[in-house]
Image 1 (cartoon, rainbow, N blue to C red):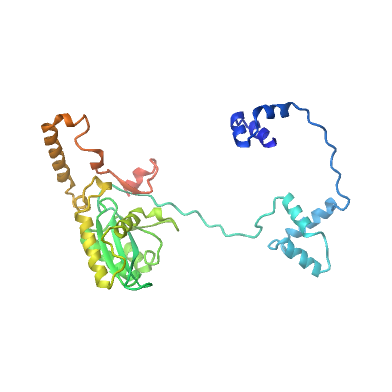
Image 2: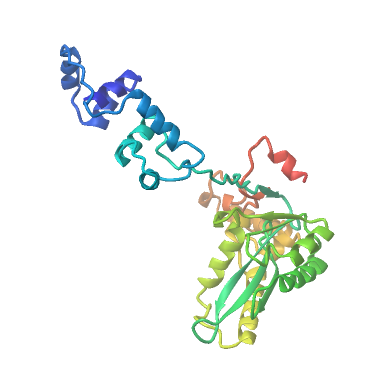
Length: 335
């Protein structure tokens, strides 16, 4: 009943208070109208500590000697010194009255991680990369697939398979990718050892490429790489294991070629990544419009007043990792 009255006292509607507490409004109204009987004040126990003694206990608990210790430890230490000021329960009671029943030791305060916010409105601006494991010939043996993707076109600009993961191997892949496809504005990755390695950091710094990293344990901060790995491993042709490193490399090369040049991606207007990356999507769209226009002319009764192409065939103007606020988005576009 007290909870019901507390809710209504802070302007919670009576219907909502009834739903939260299960108390009928009529019962609550009768209780409110009922006079409150005066209760005699509770007498302090005869064995209670005096205010001066309670103050002494509080000073001792918060002293430099005992501020980092639990009441049980403090009580035992005092007993070893021949001192008794009160029970352990009394110490907890005094701390609770002063809102100090919590972690009283000095704690490290880690600053909040900044959410990466990246925007791309054309190919070659933002690359995302990651490493995934490919099962080897026996249990416990894995090959490492290094994959870099252009987040706007979804084009796989680099894919390498190695027997191990290391910063120098990642650096070599990046050099080859940049020589072929150009140097991007931003390279985004998670916080793996290769992604944060000195060799990769030095390369990107020399090329004046902005480094971006996901927040710890936040896979959504690297969505394009994670989504591509799922596309790879859920493909019907993806094997359970690779017999050799050469087999893994051959499969990866074939799959990447199919993905780049044959896979029509729903996120880029059902174009292939290669068409978008190399600017051929304009001709493809024009051809689609001509085909639909001819079909509309031949059978106008089969078409409504919809635009020339279905919305699913529209190429987005921008893509992003963690969409920025509208106030900050223009700044990020020009970065």
